[in-house]
Amino acid sequence: MKIKAIRTHILQAALSQPFAYSRAWYDSRTAMLVEIETDHGLVGWGECYGPAKMTAAVVESIAPWLIGEDPLRTDYLWQMVYGRLRDHGQKGVVIQGLSGIDIALWDIKGRHFGVPVHQLLGGALRTEVTAYATGLYRRKSGDPVAYLAEEAAGYVAEGFSAVKLKVGFGVHEDAATTRAVREAIGPRVALMVDANHAYDAVAAVKLGRMIEPCDIGWFEEPVPPEDVAGYRAVKSALSIPVAGGECEFTRFGFRDLFVKHALDIVQPDTCAAGGLSECKKIADMAEAFGIRYNPHVWGTGIAIAASLQLLAVLPPHTPLSLKPLEPILEFDRTEHPIRQAILIRPIEHDHGIVRVPDGTGLGIEIDRKALARFAVG
Ligand code: CA
Image (cartoon, rainbow, N blue to C red; front, top):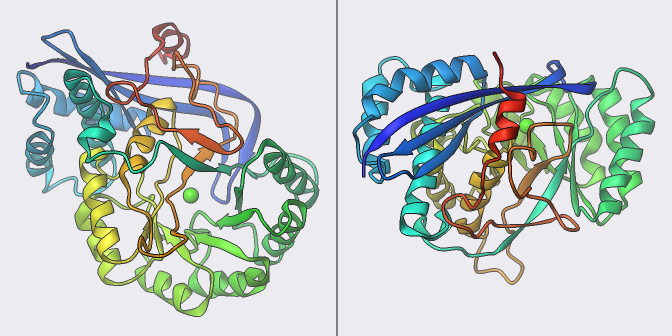
């Protein structure tokens, strides 16, 4: 079997209401999908996290190197592409492009062997994963203390046992919204906060101390990803676990975070950090360093399916304890017209639990009519 064609799909959809995190406003959602076709007629799908036009250019530049290659040689192809671009793209959009290609190759591999990807990754430890609701963004109008508390209570009513709040809007405002959300969800639902690297270590520690009484599950991206010393300072100052890693890439990048003990929880994005091949290796390293692994997920159903295939095989944290910590799925609840529309069968939650797809490959089927509907240009 040989790779016959590699196609990119840039998709975009306008939002009915803009929303903001600490860095920017969103008024549309985009996606960059990778489609790989073999000479046997098999088609695999992947997705790239990151700026869509740039990742599409990366994938289209890499494509000629892969035409005619055996799609089942996933590690060989990863190494070949990485080796050719090592001098120019150890991080960032090059690895994001490679991630989408790698995920599509795994989809082909699973379909070829007639099994779900998780079986080829070592076999599932679980058939379903607890999901946490990612939402609680800012709106153009209204009092965030009020509307965030109301939104959080809605997730609990849907059955979610964990929610994540966006912070990074000033420590006093963040402390107020965090307290309001904790009050709204009660003591038994997990609450995490995510600053999207809005702070320096001094401000992050100040906020962390203010919200420590709110029983915070983790403090995500408190400081910029390059500031490893800042991560260490925040981690040593707070009793809240520190999380991060959605802006890091490959085993080589994560190695440096792990040896410096900069994180308690690592969050590689499967569609950015190097694909399923690389994220499995990063997960194995994380286990050896005693670091929890919960993937960052911010994409369409392809990104969710790929993340679930990996989540199925991740070991629980502290596996010998009576109540191990299971890895959990980031489940984006913000508006995303493309997310589920491109799947023939959407991946939904049931009371905060999401089943691992058990069809062949990634376990999803793509709706080409939806692709056409959201296609750019
Ligand atoms: Ca995040």
